[in-house]
Length: 633
Image 1 (tube, helix red, strand yellow):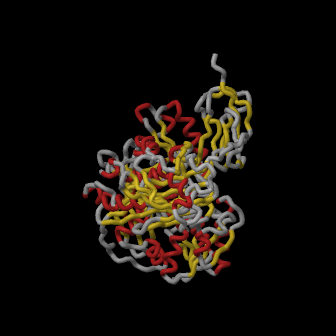
Image 2 (image 1 turned 90 degrees about the vertical axis):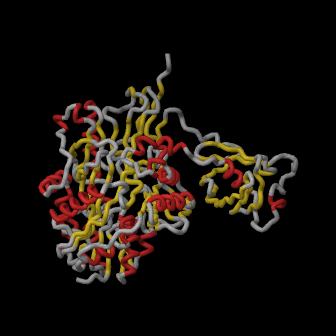
Image 3 (image 1 turned 135 degrees about the vertical axis):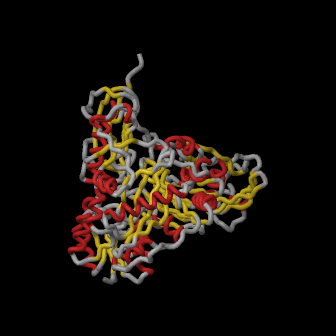
């Protein structure tokens, strides 16, 4: 069979990435989109696009019938599912085939076999793949702790809980089951030992219909937040040859056990003493596939398409070369419980020398309905140290305006001694998050640059005529106040009163200072009421402080406001006005951008108002509840 026109049943970064390969192969491309995505980059990149009416994934990207109808209407003859959404839905794969379309993915039977982690483990045990022994929660003892609860029907960190004491086991089971049911439509949860300081190592496999199965090296995905990957690399560093070979052998055995075809990933947990255990098989393309592509010099999407057309792979894959590292740039605030961010992405610009896969362009809106990942940034070099250094430098030098991101965390992680040494595990952020989120660049020079840029109406005017010429009291210093990351800073910019600092040039977009004899260049961009200042010293978003604050810009003590738009998925049992609460007690659970967030009581006292209910959609800043703090006696 020959593919001529490809519909991608997905959105964002992965759809854009698949379209890039499809164009290179001479295929026509078809996008589908929800209403919020009508002007998204993946829609702009496609030759044709079909609307899926609605906003929520359940009404749009999870509607297999609408997607197949879109493919037929647009004349596509093949469907690529990307990752997430319907990519591991065996029924959807069957429906695509039944409609006479080519399914660019593994056989539905293979998807089905691996869809339930509990059933998959049974298959792997029969195939001789090493496994962690399951634990029956009903019979768990202190000797079994800590436990990891996992959703049987899904991944991505949804429906996962770590249990460290038996008293919290039932509550954790209920919460994990509820989240799994909401995310995957299946509330089955199982338990297994939680391995402290384990490594998440996976093997990329690629198989054809002629009996060839490739094991394309290893990847390490141990740096995770909320059981979701943040930094990935290939090959996994520091693996003894015997362990690497054992992982390859187990991955190929797993693929053969289900007669696999196409691209897939077999994931393992490697203990501190080097023992590997099967976790799951993802029957799709992984988010982190670019690091494997870089090391092996392959295009995995092109190979997926060729396998779907019936082509045979060479008996052996190409030899790997060098090392690749990928960082996921998220619109989120790691210092505030990884809170996702929404709004306009004004600028997303990276230095040359790295691969950037993104689903956004300048001016695009980052909404509440989907994952907050903005881009994947990948560096490839002959050695691991070089690849890590290139990636950290590119992230530090990027211009990202409009949203709070995890950029500083990524740079700090890549430059952390533990990561540099290759000594990483899934507990990295448990140990280092506080320090990594505290280390923010000093905004003082950025504030000075912002003030100088604001005082420079014309780029080609002489500096003296641009600094304060409009003021009547020439003897009075000119000052400006800004807030950066919640802290107010006042700067005197004419004359500059900072020791060791001299102004060399200033325009509305570029300020050059000499700082202790070193020339520093600051790029300044204003969007709405925020000035974004970028330099090698760091990136800052500065908001000018108005001369007269708004007296109504206040919040009553004890008010709990929605930190982002989302849906109330749960209210604490028995919570009602008049209920006594304690500081830090979870009161509400809010779901936004595929993540669940707890709304905690700010103090011990009495709940005096409750304005939220399960299933309710709330806007950013909406009043959810009020807690009146108890008066000390």
